[in-house]
Length: 298
Image (cartoon, rainbow, N blue to C red; front, side, top):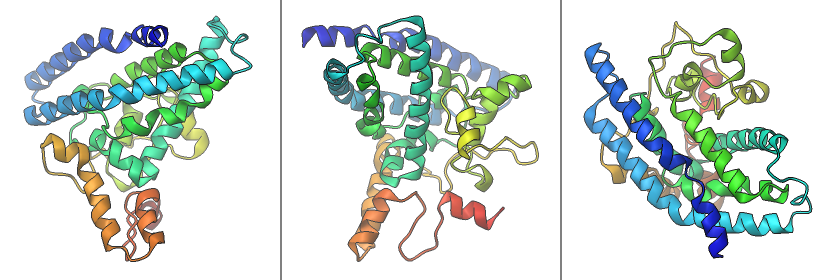
């Protein structure tokens, strides 16, 4: 067991990049102030940093447990002696991880109990590099279940965790308004600031779109892509904003909302629907799920 945990300690990318992230946030905030862009609000950024701390604490034990389970599953894999740490294995793992991240992220938006854990990340009415650190808190509990197939395919746990960290590091830089558009070839293949601004928008046409990690082609192939339109600038935040900078309310408020909705429902079917249908569903209407709103406002 000590050897397994020692391997987990080798996943240091998050620790290495955190000071760089904080410096980038400071520089972007200074530039915003100098240019009078109003991209930051002090108390909002403080709330984002609070979510970073909360999510790190919430993930501590699930991450250790997941690594141990991954290790046991890897030992059972008939492919573990074939897939080592060859260059092609890293590339294959990158594509598999990117697809799993898309599924995980999309589920966080389309299953309300998962959304309750992810909603802190979308609760800011600003989009800046600080928002990137405003991580979902409750999602740390269910996150690693999505990656369980990978050790069974022969990828060792440390490889998996390193590639997850690389993907999250990439996603930090797309939380900005300062980069408008990259050359067309990049915009077609990769998740960019333009695509991710759409993802953080509460405009009806943009809701639940662009779930990509690194490759935006996932959304384009699976019908969840929306381009950023110059005629409709993204409006950041939630369809109904929290209007609070209280870290507890931001991190856990949606769980309370689910509980209150479930108490109002009379049938078990409706109670379960509040857990597993998309946010916005209500047993006695109106139905405000993203796909319903888009169909009503094409």
